[in-house]
Length: 529
Image 1 (tube, one colour):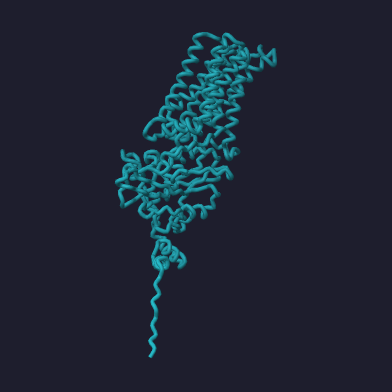
Image 2 (cartoon, rainbow, N blue to C red):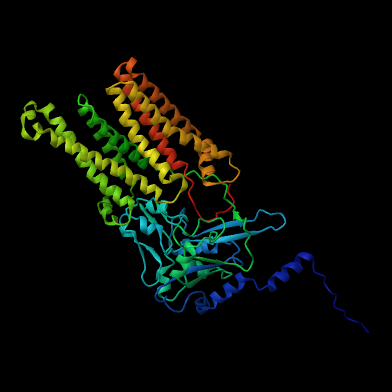
């Protein structure tokens, strides 16, 4: 009798692992099966069933314990909204602890926080943002946007993104249309671990949390006092107090915004020349022509910064809440006043008999117009200061920005005075103003030696290590210009005016560093390369 035996085949370690993996119920596999079965109702638990009530709004809630950093939310947001290749409305960053005894690592998904007091909305000069009265979602109105990008500077969380192809800014709208149909936003639906939900929150609680003296709502993020963000981050694990973003110490030079560099520097130079013309009868026409050319060049350059310049006429609609709108209106008054003043001063030169006309023989008229023009110019410089102070960035704090901008006006004013009427007193004033402007800038570079990586150290390191050539150019031009102007009493006037031109060149270089070296706040990012 023969006996048939079945031999037991022993599996290799790799085969055993593959068989075991095939039986695992991973979140991705469960998500995929539910989607293939058409079980869309499974997503409804991730969004509220009812609209917010009075004093409430929708908000993102992120469960950090569930977030794996897979970036499915990023891909879904990009695809569903048809974003350009380099455009993102949602990002994934990384937090890490700094203790060897208690290591900590956490991925973080971030998007628009749909703030209770949105900086983008408050700063927009054309009211291209609105906070939906029913849901509290902060919506961007693409057809109203002029592409000024001020909202990019105003948002402390780096949410609005400028699209060069379209010439406008765009941002996350919480998939407003999908929510209105009872469907979850793309990021919520795509997350395989259900780490993102839409919840209803009370606006009063959001504002109270923003006003309270407590740490930032997420380590490594700007403080909630700035705009009262609505997003909630939850975790069963305690987040270490020393946790920081993986890119916290990465140097991030910002865009220079050359049109704004020339706009700021040249309009302030123009105001300085107008002030000098009040005290220099012999060269008043020359100074007013210089003021007109520099002023119009600066204002013309600002138009190049806009993505949709033909819509810029609407910039006055935000006058009640936007400093940018106020700047545009004030300089809109300054320009015609300056051109009229220059024309009135030029007319007697072109038409000799014009000096006998009542319009020109009445000296008080041109004097009043000159003072009015100067008033508009100084008001415009003040609004320029407030535009950047209002962003909340330490490098653009009011006192620092006011010294820079007012310093440019005073340098131009006194330098022109030294050339026209050389005197030891004016030379001393010019030197003191130059030092008052230069010393704080030089002292700020000392923050590069700070142990803590503060915004001040960030800005100093950018200037010293990433924009060193520009920094050297700034000081070389400014110092050379100062010396040439001071040597004016012993040299031809052309040398002195060359010194004024070099001083202006130094101010333009300084203004480029003003944009390049600012420490821009943002949500936690990934490991910097």
